[in-house]
Amino acid sequence: MLGTTITQFVIEEQKNYPEASGDLTSVINDVVTACKTISAAMRYGELSDDDLLGVAATENTMGETQKKLDVLANDLFLRRTEFGGHVAAMVSEEMETVFQAPGQNNGRYLLLFDPVDGSSNIAENAAIGTIFSILKRPDAATGEPQIEEFLQPGDQQVCAGYAIYGPSTMIVMTTGSGVNGFTLDPLIGEFVLSHPEIRIPKKSSRICVNLLALNQTWDPRVERHISDCIQGREGPRGRDFDLRWSAGAVADVHRILVSGGIYFNTTNAVMKKKGIVGKLRLLYEVNPLSLLVEQASGMATTGEIRALEVQPENLHQRCPVILGSHEEINHLLGS
Image 1 (cartoon, rainbow, N blue to C red):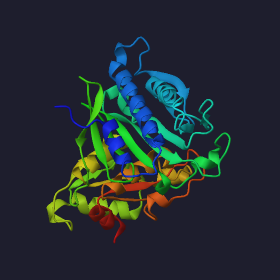
Image 2: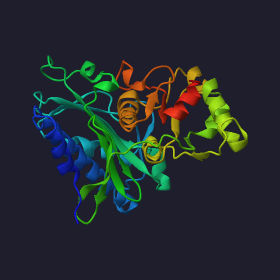
Image 3: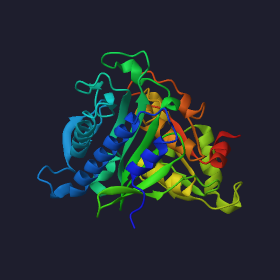
Image 4: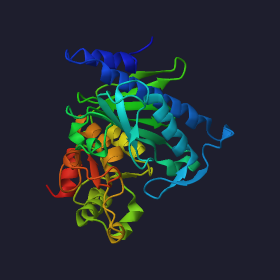
């Protein structure tokens, strides 16, 4: 029997807000179509004449070498969302500045996205993802949206989510009323509700961190937390822990949402010498993932303040982040 599709789910949620115009629902539907298109392109992989898994010989705004799938997915996302009439402009990790949706200055929403998260995993055929965030334009804004309109703290997001392209393709999403997961049914081409009301388990023995990077000297709190966990049941935590790390934020945070634990991607000594504060991008990764974690009863922090309260200063700002269950994060922070 056909379950609840993502479109049906969003429409039902919209009924809880009598003042809703349906514009946000339309934006979400366009995002879903974009993710479905990227999933199809990604699964075609090296069978394509375009060699989607190869290096593109170009760099993104942060000087990172792009894969061909990065470039293709960015273009697919733009093409699938630019003409709906409700998105005024978009920004992406792969673009230097704002993309103005043609003739859509009256659109009420702004779309932010990372078309391919974890692209270093492409060659290994490991899980990758797409992350998206939706903001509402300031009420007084007119004309073409400017960069400043996108520089809103994460707690202003009206929708956030990601698609994960693994053994199956899923979209995990929140509109501010909890987190739900939808799995793509390839027989009907629809995302169907498969993980309702996701909540991070309060207690878990899972850690998602690049352990080798600890050799580069991290925050002493991170090192203490890892040391306590490594000691297992004989140590201060009194139980054994599992280490998981995929090198992709979507895959690792998805694991935290489903199985619990802690994920962190903070600043180490090598980064500080280079003037880099954190690795993940605030607008395209930290904010949407943090909103999902909080909505799933978890906690998201920079190590100093709540992640969703960070005031963005530019489109490609990096930010340290610690995500997961309250118990694990409080232990790391020494609370």
